Image: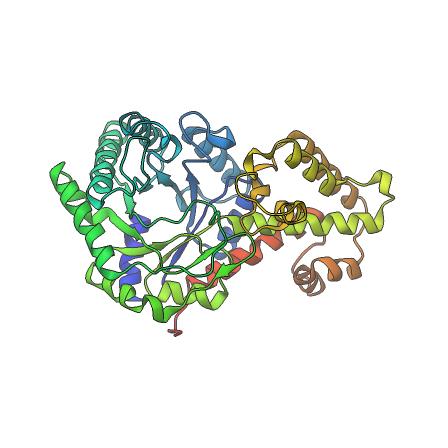
Length: 430
């Protein structure tokens, strides 16, 4: 993909040049991202994970072709040019089928890759790091690399068949954080060693050569490593540049490759800038965006309670809690402790398991009623100041119209603006 190979070349010339990937399928998050990218005249990289989108629909109910259609329809409705849009597939491999034997799981992964490539996804993260039911634990670099190469071969063949050529770019790597944040409480993380990163690259290079894919190597633009950033339900492990300095220097030996950093959600603006400058130049963000969406909706629900009699209110918070208790499958294996601790986590956890529930019909009805209740009258400025203080400044300065929808979009864009600024940094920060 020309945009992304050129981006890597640009980063090699100027280490302040980065790109971030929006990892979400929520319409409001995608609208916020498209409007932000349009206003800044930026490329927009949107990624779907193998949990969200697969050949059977994933938890969103969308196949890769469905997801592409959904995103392109949104782009058209928000006047965002399709040629500025890049679609990526994240954690593509046997992740969804790791409870099955390896042969079965890899057959499913091959079909997953076919669907993603056929649908026009151009950035492919090959993730075969997980052990399947009959595998050793952990897997060796050689097994992981041979499986990744097998999927790359399927991707290349599919692209040739469908488009007559391949412009796919790839991300590889075995030290991949759990999608959506850690499941356990964290205090410290081990940074990937330079030697481990080199071993991963060597194993993949050999595996690709074995399948006749040597020519593909310059299109492997990213290596996933652990730079020492992560979050759990209530804590964030911040980037510490000194711990990853040797790792950062190691990638300078590879002209066509940068690091891809997962779980960068909730890092400080300075940390994001430092990550980019230290060659973790592809930043992934997902839960932080839906967390911001949830913050905005909870704030609007509080404003609604100040303006409307209780029996006219949407009851969004109560409806959300009821649905999450009735259908606990998306949070019960993640949130632990006392009843109060789990209640707080359901509403406020950084891992934001709430994001799985927004499509529920009862919750969507409550959301629609909330917006309708607040659209009918002017929201008093003091209430915006109380519950959405960052948006209050923008309203007061005339940059933002104080409608519920625009307040939500702007609050999500607060996160996007931090990532955008980090990817444009021009002076080193240490």
